[in-house]
Image 1: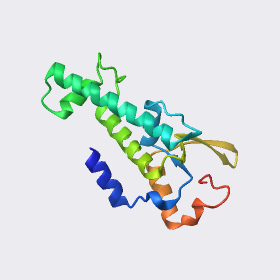
Image 2: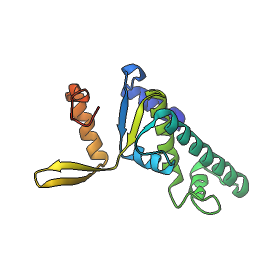
Image 3: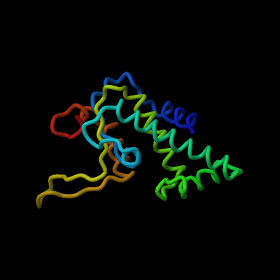
Image 4: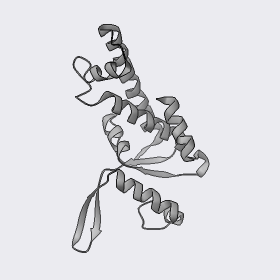
Length: 163
């Protein structure tokens, strides 16, 4: 997983030297933060990364215990059993959870320890009839990525929510 994740981020052109001061993360980022008990607002990458890495270790240790106790044949079999008692992943998909945590740890490495992060799933946006509730999905993330690629000046503009 780690090699694949690093390769994908390298291919995407993420650059730690871009002087990012704050970052809003959505989608799988939110779920990983929620699982790892990362404060969703008002935290730094250092705090988030430490929590992600601690939960990665917990999952890997649970997987080692499954392999030792149950002699599973494949990684898929091992991770399928990690979600069940006595390993207590709370019914979550261990492979997906581990992957999300590892991606978040990698994002944290790229951002740098001092960057302020927040993890958001649900938004309250101003609308014509008052406040509109909006839930981000992968398609919203794709749209925002495309928007920022086409109009990078939005990242620094006042009152856009990006700063």
